[in-house]
Image (tube, rainbow over all chains, first blue to last red):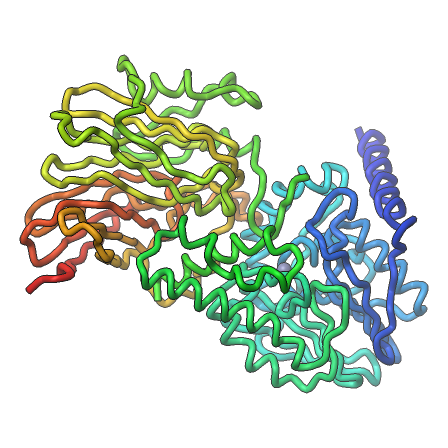
Amino acid sequence: MRLRAATFALAAWMLAALVLPAHAQTEPFAIQKIADGDYVHFGQVAMTTAANAGDIANLGIVVGRDAVAVIDTGGSVAVGRALRAAVQKLTDKPVRYVINTHEHPDHVFGNAAFANTGATFVGHHNLPASMRAHGPFYLHSFRDVLGAAAIDQVRLIPPTVLVDHTMTLDLGGRTLLLTAWSPPAHTDCDLTVLDEGTHTLFAGDLVFLDHIPVIDGSLKGWLDVLPRLAELSAVRVVPGHGHRIGSWPGALDDERRYLLTVEADARRLIAAGTPLAKAVPLIGQSERGHWQLFDDYNPRNATAAFSELEWE
Amino acid sequence: MPTIDHAAGFGRTGRRAVLGALSGTLLIAPRMRAAMAADADPWPALAPQIFPDRALEDGTNVLTIDAPYRAEDAAVVPVTLHTTLAADDPRQVRKITLVIDANPSPVAAVFTLEPHAGIDSIATRVRVDDYTNVHAVAELSDGKLYMATRYVKAAGGCSAPALKQTADAIPVGTLRFRELQATDPAQREAQVMVRHPNYSGMQMDQLTRLYIPADFVEKLRIWQGDQLLLTVEGGISISENPSFRFSFKPNEAKTFRVDGSDSDGKHFSGSFPAQDAA
Ligand SMILES: [Zn+2]
């Protein structure tokens, strides 16, 4: 049995190893330097598929004098391993921190690639509870999409260092300011990472560029967080999704406009007594031309916004 | 191409063995394994369990079901029931049973319509756990059952994580009542909303390996003055923060009343002024 299990694990590993390089032939696991010591891997602007192995979120690497922090680990263990290999190509310094910006699978399913490396996992104080409550659902849901072999490798590794409000991490001459946001916005466990040396902000999914924002926490909460987020002293931002670096805080403009539009449309339709089913296709439509994956997420955002706002 | 995203998902097997709790007459045995095979139609086995020894007539001229063919959010699928009896038909709809065939606990709700209430539409939001037929079975005043069917593509609704409302300021059991603008003064429309997580009993705590116990709105009664309009017996297939929107014939009453209870024994009630109470 042990041998069988080991053989299976090896087979699963090889399969996973094949998935990414297959995709890598056309698009290698690219790392871009965006500032001194700051690197980003841009995930595809796409839904998770077996072909992209969940490589759809932007991942960050910060290299200090003594150690490295990675920000999010991608949507599968294969992506996490590719990220880890990319770090090893960059530097000999150890990964001291793995920071998860929130609970979504495309940001945390790669965590297992950094297990047993000595790295400390860091996240929002709500992240362990959210992972516990929703993790099994995500594992189940993504089994059909990523494939059984990829899902069987995933381990939900919650953070052991929790951020209540703010916290600084030192990588040696390089300070990271972590902020745990509330109330719920994109999710109820959103965390941002500001490299205070270069004023580079790794925003997780509190910032979307080109990829339509996804509301899985609270529309009103998100709009409440935005002005405080804008006060962070950054000059550039790495969005959670979207294939470019944004200027700060201008990068928030499109997202804010989208959220305000959804809010205004939903409020108007609720006030008019329009039922949910008739309201959803009308909400946010003026934003259609501005976003990729609009039809994949806008109806769900509209449903979430309507359900939230009808209790105002 | 499957498009799984952050919160909606596909749930095909596994959870079926978990029997969603339903009370009293709504209690339904877990569906037989044979009926759970992929693509098997569960209805032939299900119908006799819900309506033992009753014939189901064609409901084409009795009621219709409105629901999206492809649901955007499996945890919040809008369903509207319309009664379509001809105006001169002496029969009335007394009861409508809403069944979501593929759900672990298929009976979503039973609506009892009072004879004088004049209810000809009821809209709610349901969880849908698989690609499934939705059945609505109307019992008429002639004692016969009439059935309408609609197919819905959605999956993962019953175990979909609840919206993030744990830190919510609105207490469980809070009622909202709203009369909608009516175009026809003889036929009005109102919406009752209940703040309630309506836990399906199918969300697992990964540490304890235990399912969060089902806790859902079991019964709601809606009165116009002293006149009972509508009784809803609900199950775990009704979405979080249950919403019921229905048409009714107005009387002279100055207030509406709503009372109800959940499966935990919690009672809630409220009184609301009629829109043009004057
Ligand atoms: Zn996310």
